[in-house]
Length: 218
Ligand code: G16
Ligand code: MG
Image (cartoon, rainbow, N blue to C red; front, side):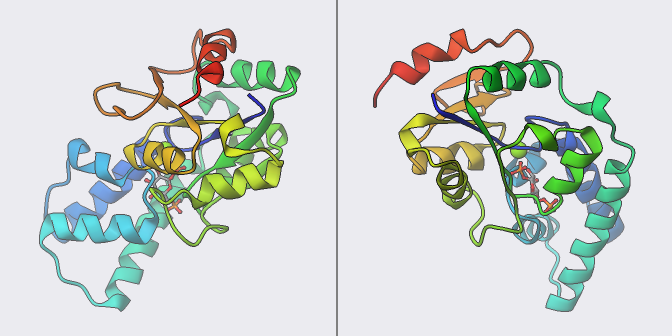
């Protein structure tokens, strides 16, 4: 294990909840219901791709101009929810896990679809722990395309087989697999079926538990 690449939303911080609330608010404004189950398909997906899915759910036709406005409104509300975040919002066990990894000389990267990733890392004080940050401003193709993780590994100078990705989204797990990396799912094993291992969160997760995974070759 030479490098860890972390997704942001739903892995390091619970902004996945804020994304859901912001999309749900837009859906309500447009006159339809948007549930948490439907939201699952948006995790790890870029803002504009997410909007297309939301509009399709409501059977809404919109012009490009309207779509840009909806995306802007959703983002403004999302950022309002995020503006209250502090270091206390880093998910349980995350900081300890990243510190342990850094002590062992493992390089740390961020692989997020979010254009707001830098802002959020600053709010919660995580930026200094990262050797590289790959966010939605640096990638052309969103997850499940492997680009975000390929750029991360290249930045860190490691081969895909030496990188472990931590993901909470089906699209992100697929992206990591397509990049030829090992994937640890954070969340529900029934949803993250393609991950090599799944843990509910980072609480109590130690590097020792991942050594076995690193030794596996597939
Ligand atoms: C995140 C979320 C997605 C969101 C995307 C774009 O990705 O999971 O729900 O649509 O970023 O975010 P933004 O609108 O802030 O650019 P990740 O990869 O960090 O899970
Ligand atoms: Mg995520």
